Length: 517
Image 1 (spheres, rainbow, N blue to C red):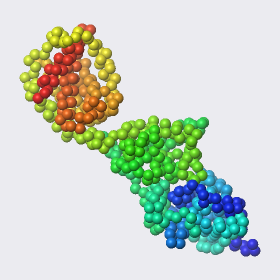
Image 2 (image 1 turned 30 degrees about the vertical axis):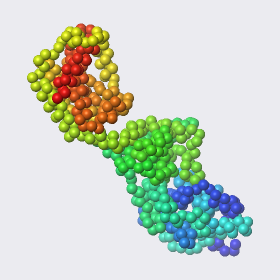
Image 3 (image 1 turned 180 degrees about the vertical axis):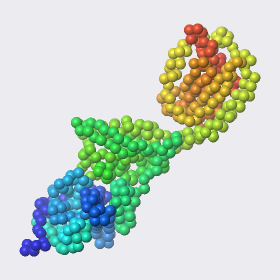
Image 4 (image 1 turned 120 degrees about the vertical axis):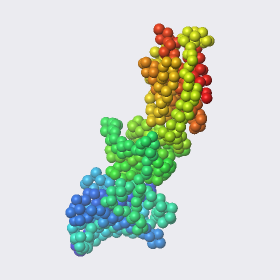
C-alpha cells in the first residue's frame, strides 16, 4: 500500500457471504450480547494487568441513535493489538483460548453484519501507542466483489485502552420503546452476575443496567432457597450442574423458571424467557410455573454458535431434566401449594394452635371433671358389639408405625382421664402431607399412659373443610377420641393381643359423646 500505517487484510469470504449473516435467526439482545461478551472477556482475561494499572472495573456503553440508525458499543476493557484486531474482523478466525465467552470467534462479525450494512471497529490495547481502525461496508464490497479491508493505524497515548464498534445503515430497527425495554431487561438478566459483581458496568442510552435478585419465600420457618451441586454421565461424558433452586416470595410467570448459565452468562433465561420444561413445571397456568425458579450453571454442556441455546437434542436434555427433577422434588411439592393453601397452613400459628387447645381442653375438663364412673370391660364391650370378628393389635400397630412422619411445630398436649385411676397425656400434631399421607397416625407408649397423634390436615377427605376454624376443633376432638379408644382397647386386650371391632366402635362412640360439648 505504500503506507506503513495502513494494512490490507484479507477477511477471506466474499462480501456476499458476509451479507448472509443478516439472515441469521438472531434476537437483538443476543446480537448485542455478542459485543458485551467480547468486552467482558477482554476485561476478565486481562484483569490482573488492568489492576496493576489502577483499573479495577470496566464500562460498556451501548447507544442507539434511532434518527440516524446508528448503534454504538464502546468499552474500557483491555483493547486489542494488531493480531487480535485482525482476528476479530476476519471470518473463521477463533481465538487461541476457547474457554472464554468468545469461544467461536464469530460473534463480532456475525452480530455486526446482522444489525447493519456498514460497521467499523476501533481499538487500542492498554500500554500500546497503536490504535487500529477498520470499516466493513458490505454493499460496497459486494458491488466491487472484493474481500479485503484496510486497517488504519494511528498513534495514541499508552494510557488509552478499549474498543468501539459503530454500526450504521441499521437493518434491524430497535428504536421502538417496547423493543428497547425488552432488550434492556434481557441484557440485565443475561449479565446479572457481572453487574452484581461491581466489576462490570453496562449502560444503555446512558442509563445503567441493574439487576435485582428475586426474594425467596419464607414458609415453615425457613427460606426456600438451596444450593445445587450434582453430576451425571451422558454418552461417557460427565456433566456437572451447580446453582440454586428457590421459590419466589412474590410469584409471577415471567420471573419463574430457571436461568441457564454457561461461563457465568445466561444462555437461556430472563423475563418471560426462563427455562420451564413441562416435566417439572407442567402447564403455564400451574402454580409451579409461577413460583419455582433458580439459576443453574451448565458449563459442561455444548452450546450453539449464537449462544442462545444448548446442543442437547440427542437425549442430553431429557436426562438433565430427569436428574434436575430428582434433586428438587421437595421444592416442586412446595411450589404446588397455592397461596390460599400456604396461608391456611400459616394460620396454624402457635396462637391459633393454643386457641384450639384451650377450647378442647375446656371441653375435656367440663366432660371428664368427675372422671368416668364406669369404663366397660372388654367382655362387656364384646357383648355390645355386632360382630365377633377380631383384629390383631400388634399387626395394626405395626402398620401405624410405618406411616409417613412429616412433623411441624403445631403440637398441643392434653391430659385426659383414661379411667377412674389413670390419667393419659396425648400430644396432637397437625402435619401438612399430601394425598398419599395417612390422615391419622397414633403412636402409643408401651405402658399406655401417653400417645402421640399426627393429623394430616391436607388429606383429600378433610381438605375441603380444613379452612374452617370450627372444623379444626372438631377434628382435634375426633383425634382424641380415636387415640383414647386405641389406648383403651390395648389396655383391655385379650391375652393373645386381639380385640373386638365392636369394642373399639363402642369406646369411640362413648368418647365422642363425652367430647361433644
